[in-house]
Image 1 (cartoon, rainbow, N blue to C red):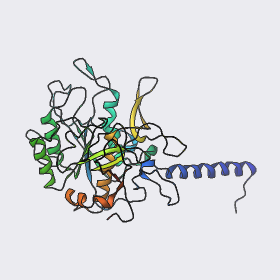
Image 2 (image 1 turned 90 degrees about the vertical axis):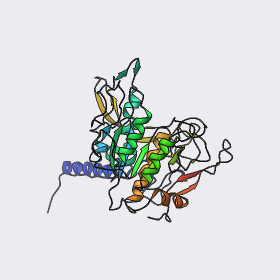
Image 3 (image 1 turned 180 degrees about the horizontal axis):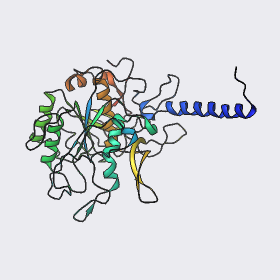
Image 4 (image 1 turned 135 degrees about the vertical axis):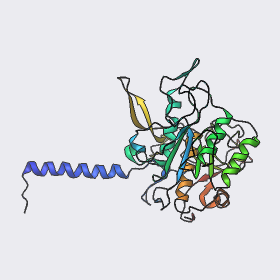
Length: 364
């Protein structure tokens, strides 16, 4: 029999309180995922995957972006060996290589200096897909593997680089490159700004990927109501617009009746004291401390269609972890089971907008 002194009892109480606090904190989830408690209030646009456990099939998601900074605790165990696809003569690394990390913080391309936001963009996108929960950054599918592919940095990318990046991500051979040993089932493209009509060269790549049931997910762009541009306007691509926590289409999102799905993208703070009123997505990122050293952080600062897209990529990978044989065409046929109406926007009277969601009737 144990006998506790007053000091022992006080210490024990502190330990119990600390453990309870830790458990409570460990159960906190980003608002866009919903809640583990069926009685808890959730954001109207939450995708409600909080209680959905990944299935037995491991899914690779290619993040074609600015590269991913290795070493963030929230991405520990999630990263695969990637590739730098930038073939620009101004690439400070001398061209393509197996180094998929972003440019350094002080990287330049002529007179252009790479922004810190661009450097961490790919890392933040990856964390929304597969964050392991450390520091409160939980991805939609924490069992997914991320294939980081660096496409842009201080120097502009080329169309050929994008086509090669997508082709290589899917496991197809690309001249001069080693075969990708970890072909992706989902390719996330968190950027826009190409041609107003999908070029035949890009469409051929998307079609080729579809022959292997590879999903291509693309942000519609932060173009304040403009029509879709590449790559979101290509046939078979899952184009993603952004809604706020209250299920309204964000003002910055492109608006087009062809947009396949909307997902939380964050934006300005909302009124009220709800847990989602800050309307930002929590991401894994990096910042500089007072000593000038880079440090990893977790911050609620994700805003844009480029952050809505990885929620969809993570969602698709979560479905594929249960239904590994699903094709993009099959997913699109069943989209009504994975979506709900978005609040009507007067800015797009011909839009029938649908928001991403997991429901009790979703076919998992």
